[in-house]
Image 1 (tube, rainbow, N blue to C red):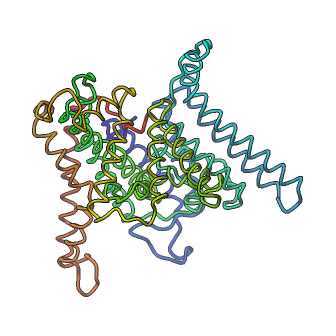
Image 2: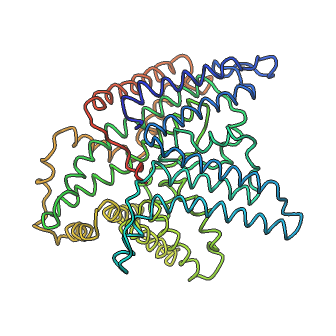
Length: 508
């Protein structure tokens, strides 16, 4: 089930929200007993209300996953059981009790990590490894194994919990329902962001709900929906056409237009999903950390990875790069750590040589930037240009079906393609909708909307209160409401007309 589908928007989500609030409303605290008044129209939840809310959200999340995976929902149950049990066992072993206890904790951690990675390797990489061994040594083939939805995300999320319990940075989960809710929460289950237990543990036990938070969640969800439907899906038509060309048909114009289109598609597709996940989380009372921060404004590849898929890059930093030694060893060791981490980051995205090479490609530029650290790349504009070129050439490697197609695009992009530079043969394939989406994508890959919002708030803010409540601020709030619902209404016809169009990161 895709967030940007009629089934989800008009059937599943309303049902899940109604069931959730029906479960928690009878358990609201009275203002007198809680020592505080209503917050944005809602009263604070009691612990019982939170538990019933967790149970309702867990049921909705399992239904959401069952919709797409049916019998393979057992994989989720295995991940929940394995890591919940590991947390309990780790919590029962106090490392202060001596070497024997510390070794027992290490064995528990190793078994849990091996179990998690074993699931991931079996379902995601066994086909690739068997094919590789078959080509090299004639090993027997194995039956093709379909990739379960979101396995890379929920396995990494579960592993982060177990490792954090081992390190002592979080206590073991108190209850199975709350922990299962953490692993399966449908807003971020199949494509992230990868949520750390430490970031939501307190919310799983006690959270505050308000009309303001729900309204904020709806706005954020609609913005993400518009990113996916009005921009990503439209420019995807152009990218698919260009990357569907035979190697000897890829011209300079086709290569560049296709690459620019895919650069916009993957950003608006994935950041749109993250916006929708964050918005859905708020509707249910949760706050997830941001996953994107306008990555195409970066002046270096290092900065790009601080802005792109933040939850994944910080996961690899905290759970792989730092344990490998980080930058605490020799210069050569630091470079090795960086390169290995990003090679594995690329391989996390998919079981193919292209993804592995994509990770190694980014790792190479990170090593080069660290080697030449302190040497200016020139004016800010030059830094932006350098980073965009590196990232865009990398997206070709990410998108291409095979290494030969990557080389064909790269050759065409530097003028060694099928014909002299020109792009009209691609540009005329599609009408104004795609062209508008391209222009809008370029524009809104920069913080135009937040800047415009701040400017309007400055004009219409109440000088006495310093906010937009009351007076002229009502104009701003009304305008924001009109814009948000106009975006939603613009999306609906596209949703009705489109066929199934999943998010790119669903396949990872």
